[in-house]
Picture (tube, rainbow, N blue to C red):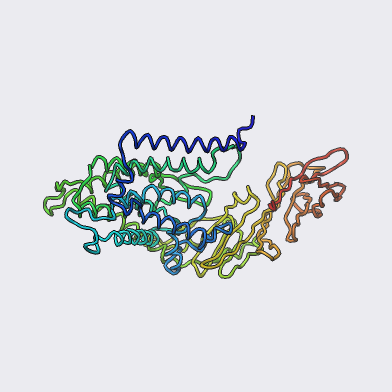
Amino acid sequence: MAFDGPLVGWGSLVALLVGVGVSLVALVRLSDWQPLATARRRLLLGVPVGTVVTFLFLNLVFWVVQGAADGQPVVVGFRSWSLFYPVGMVAAPFAHNGLGHLTGNVLATLVFAPVAEYAWSHYPTERGSVSFSSLGTNPFARVGAFLLAVFAVGLATSLFTPGALIGFSGVVFAFAGFALVTRPLLAVAAIVGQQAVGLVYFGLQNPVLTATTQTRVVAPSWANVAIQGHALGLVLGVVLGLLVVRRRDRTPDVRHVWFAALVFAVSQALYAFYVPLSTERFVLFRGLGTAAVFLLAAVVATAVAETDRTVLARIDLSRREVATGLLLAVLFALALAAVPYNLADVSGDVNPEDPNTAGSVEVRDYTVAYVEGVPNQYVEAVRIPFIDRGLSVNESGVVVTSDRRNAWEVVVSRSRLAFRGRASVAVGGLGWRERVVVNRTQWSATGGGTAYKVYLRRPGQPRRLAYGSDPATAEPVVNGTTIRVAPVPQPGGYRVELLENDTIAATTPVPLEGANRTLRGLTFNRTGSKLRVVEGDTVLTIATYRSGRR
């Protein structure tokens, strides 16, 4: 029976829409809740205008400025590499590294930003205040202030987050932090609502999904969390929320704030304290991160509390002041940690001394290359005070560098390229973009390793050999002779090598499809993707070929 036909798909889509609609209608009817009337009390025409403008702006940046409408967005050129590259510093908080990244942040924005905007309010909340009586009570000015705060927080996450940032998640966390201390119960509802909105979105996108088991190269989920940017955004939002709460003298229930902060921190994986050892290895400090989550909830709740009970009577220091000071200290510590990153002077060197690195591709100020086991120049350029040796992380994969932008990034890891065999890398900047195609061909020796070559190609130009690996030795030994396959510089070239006493005794090019080659009494035959050796009545598979051009 077919479960993925058009009838089943349309039926599932209709069922989804009906189910969501019936549920919402039941909520309104049973509770006498009037969501539009509630929204109109604080929002122009009941619409979170700032949220809508932010949504449109994020999509404009991704689809037009980054060029995603042409198939693949430019990422490297829009990261916050350093203060010496101001375009990246300004653009990074509003750019994204892919459609999935944009979708996640946009859905979260649509959930948390309206709560923050509602708490801020387009209309004055103080008793006796009248709209349009002053600039501060003008609804349009208040919408503008909200949007200005969005831009300012985005810029702050770029300037004061350690590492090369890209993405709006820092601002999303600021929305959530603001909501946690101004409308904690509504914030908890938004946390749950985020999951529901995501479920509905992906249900509409794929009402019927057929999945199969497959081998994939996937980093741990927590290793994809930019916790430093998230923490900065969250604390910024909390501090802004504290200012609003104290100005309006409307303190929420501390228990609600503590619970909301804890639920949010856990749901958003703020416990993910990890250190990358390379693009493929990570260390997670789960215990330390979990302790930090609970401490964060306690500090936020204490900072909101009305109590003025003193901690140090001698200097009249209250608990609330201590908690607020701790939040400000976190902001200061993150900002201080960002200084060496923002002042890093990155070299575009991709290790020219490596004899296996035969070539790279230049696209304006960018260099695209393939490397293995070379130091990450961006990490090494960061000079942390009081640490003489600095940091060092070895990387392998397709690297994009730019001296002008202070950029050095592995855009496709070695394992991912080996799995896929092919990749496309987009480079560019404001007003321009170009792709570089990466191909990997390989011969996997039977019972041994893999000999491979990596090629780079710009549109309209011949491909260039970027990397050639060491030979791969097959496990079978024929008549005391060891056989291995080795890459050679010629386009598409590999050769068969016969070893005697660990010395190359003879070589011959790998035969073409359907052809044979004879070397020292051994016949090598290539049929399909298999390279076989024939000796008398014995036929052994020596290696298997795979091309990345697919």
